[in-house]
Image (cartoon, rainbow, N blue to C red; front, side, top):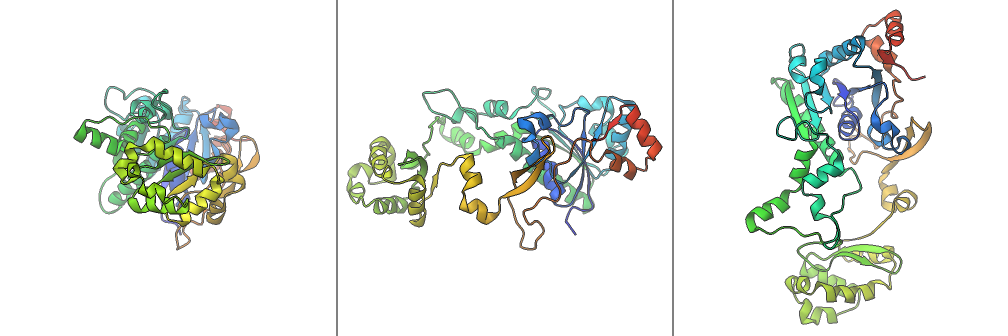
Length: 395
């Protein structure tokens, strides 16, 4: 038994944020019907399908043409019977198909309907498309990343997408819990922009209190020194000393008691003021170590540190990843190849989730006939839908 095995989810999402959300629900037991357009989820075609794989395990794929009356009827039937509907269209788009919340709630009053968009259902930006890097720019996140003498830098991972998906899953489960305790269904309005603004948290709070704007600091941390990226003999490492004790430990590891006695570096405030001369002293010491060697020395001493690793190092030679079984076998349906992908980042002592996905990502329309049969469509009716182009099955 799994905690969500009594939930059916109509998944009208594409790209990353929505699929992240519905994959979390699927891996906890929900039946997730991924409703794809004739061309398929648009991320099936990016990076040879490798942007599709990590976020679409455990789902059934129904390929249907919403613009065809028969296709619209199929999706409407699924949505009116579903416990949860998740969609990632721009606000107003689904109104023309009567698949918006206001239309569906007339037939499915207990539905939990999650509308996931770039900017939310209200405000002057409500109808604009949302794209993670653009949201980084508009939310202020991009302005605080990069170097002061260079243009702002984007984060080259879809963090806002993934964070929005995780927040959406949490909101959905909260709404389901409320409904099951005697409440009602509800409309959840969540957007990439809202999530990004929430992540600007202390920068916004600090500006409101002090009037200080955050500066792009490159590889430097804030509030203490040394705190940043440093070169070593064979790569880079991030080192953070967040207290006087940590700085003392660092000096002991390097056998540099003189750095404790230097009046320029006596306190955290002193070290922040004289960050650059301290950095020069440390670089000269760090270059005698490999990044991994120095990481080990510092971590053993209780100093936060991390060698800057590349993707190939993560895949080929990372003891922590291997110990935690964080990479698992999966399948790329677009390339028809087995691939590695990160698993979900949690485990349960009860064995509820053991780190392996329940099923591989589906081919486009792989479950079309199964879904229609479960809706009591006859073989003749399914054949007619195929002939009309209303639905598509994988070959």
